[in-house]
Length: 228
Image (cartoon, rainbow, N blue to C red; front, top):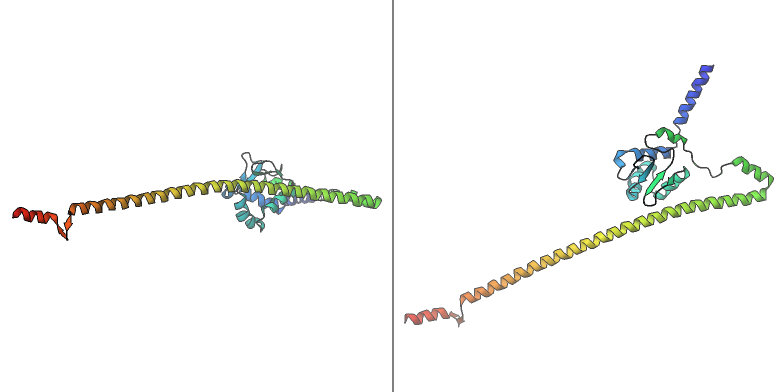
């Protein structure tokens, strides 16, 4: 009997270890894969992960793992599992149980519930329904405000990043325009020099032919006169 209970306990532990949420498992697989290091990877000490290229992350990785390409939705999902954005200059997320080489800790991460203590809320409804309705409304508004604030922060950060990328692209475009202008000026200068050379050669050729009178070169006439 004792042996059976021990076996049941071991089975329960195995089931518990294997019950990590699919979202966390897929996210861990993306971060852990060396092939995606240029897009998403662990930070230097493996205590957090960084999305280096949000555009490629949303376009290539999210559809492959989550069947959507919404980066903001992915960030909201991280928030529901207690992840924190710990850097202002990049998309770096941290959770104490989400670490490099510690995949077995994923089962310790739990999704946050909108209602943390359902029993207490039921008791409040029974004892003071009016006050409870007001409190519940405040909680809903607070939760909605928190979610909206998180989304707004995400959008602001994304907007800043896009502005920076746009500035870099504009600078590169200006440089390329200047190079094209210099190239066109060089081509025009070369064509002008060629044209000038042709004109000079033509003039020199005409001079070397000597003057003509009624289509006859004067040099010929001078030779005839000398023979006479």
